Amino acid sequence: MNLADRIRGGLLGLLVGDALGVPYEFHPAHGIPPREEIDFVPPPGFDRAHRGVPPGTWSDDGAQALVLLESLLRVGRLDLDDVGRGLVRWADEGWYAVDRHVFDIGVQTSHAVAALRAGVPAALAGPSDVHANGNGSLMRVLPLALWHLGSDAELVADAFAQSAVTHGHVRSQVCGALYCLFARRLLLGMPPAAAWSAAWAAFEQVHREGTPEHAELTSVVFPVGAAYEVRGGGYVVESIRAAVALVTAGGPGPVDFARVVTGAIALGDDTDTTACIAGGLAGIVVGEGGIPRRWLDALRGRELVEPLLDQLVARRVVPACGTVGDTRGT
Image (cartoon, rainbow, N blue to C red):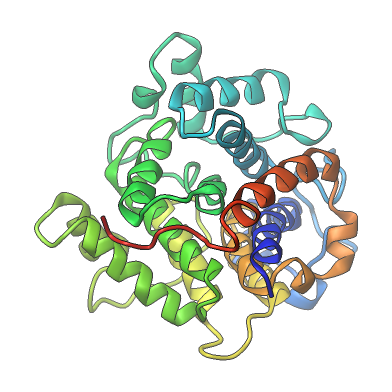
């Protein structure tokens, strides 16, 4: 599998997972249909969420990811104010939303967009208190890892910065940075379990023991030596734990994209975002060809995605001769 296939698989996996989870959002785990019945169109009798939204439509998760990617490709660097303007345009005009229909927006993101409209600099727009740790910045960050050619330290810094536009607390920033490091190593073709261990080690090279960032990682996000339940809620810590657990669950065996995203949805609650976050990682592992064709064919809005994918692949594969970025810690 080549780098282009992994890049396409990552972004399309994110969008497919998001769209697949939309009808099941807000339902508890016990109310989700059996995994073999989870599809863009839920089984008969299921009380689907967002009834007016056509099957195969991504939500705010996918739209914000595309807003971020478009800015990165056009500007050539992470420009927080440009990303902020893009998020306002998404919220107000439906930019990169399918049919320009914005049907969902998170609490912290809503507050941040209001601040951006009022002229607050993007770097300061995101709420930063400890209770403002929804998964809204994590769900859109994957394009940063797919686009980035810098060192691990630079990738971590950019992941922290992009989170601040809507989620300014260090916990959300740590989750986004760790996710990007994991995605980068999956792009290298590393098996998921090995990629996860390497991502953790890379984070510790950037933020060493004794720093607040390291403390967040080892005492809150993934507390060392502690057991925790995998859940599908909207808390950023729950989201990254679920994604990592689902993608690494097969051990050294092959990753099954459908099993990952339906497993994310089976957790209930914030089904679209959990499946979006996990689906992006699984899509990198299996490539575009490993995503079920029926879902790719039914995914709406492909005309919005393909031009961005063409630019992204051209940036990463042609000039870089197949490289995936500098994995040095500094």
